[in-house]
Image 1 (cartoon, rainbow, N blue to C red):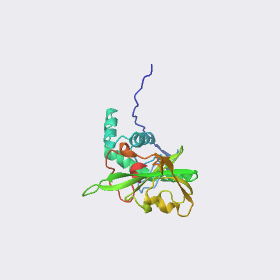
Image 2: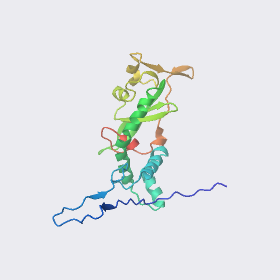
Image 3: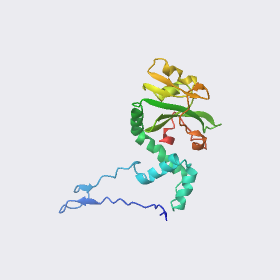
Image 4: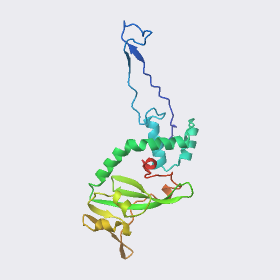
Length: 228
């Protein structure tokens, strides 16, 4: 018989006692006194943040791997006794974006060493003051290694250039004209496959509607905060 033991939320209390050398007099009226020694603050993913690394990782996995929107996470943690607002979760993820950027860039660098890559885009709705605007998420796949995303306001050649910039090798993409300029120099080779008697470039893994059932948060130049 297989059973499950529910996860638990705990409070980790960090104590930083202050020390003064034995025999030294306490502080005087003028404020001068012995040197006080105290441990440095614990290094956390979010400075002075309430959430520890384990809880932050849990929210990221639920939201981006399990595709649970923030309102469902709010209810999930409430069942465990933690009243956690969805706005707080979004704020955490926004602050973590800068922290993991070097890791994401390293993943891109490793992906570019692979013999072939797959690329595709999917449209998403972005919240705006007057009405939703159409934007795009690009996905770059290094099979068996990485699935990487970039956001762009438009589906154009400039957006394409940002994703595989500097890559040389074989590129699996659909037949959209925004990719054509990549093949001009010969450093990037277009890859197609035979589908139903005709030759077409297949669309690789893509987020799809199931992965993004709701409009994504309002964006300026980037939605890295939403997807890192």
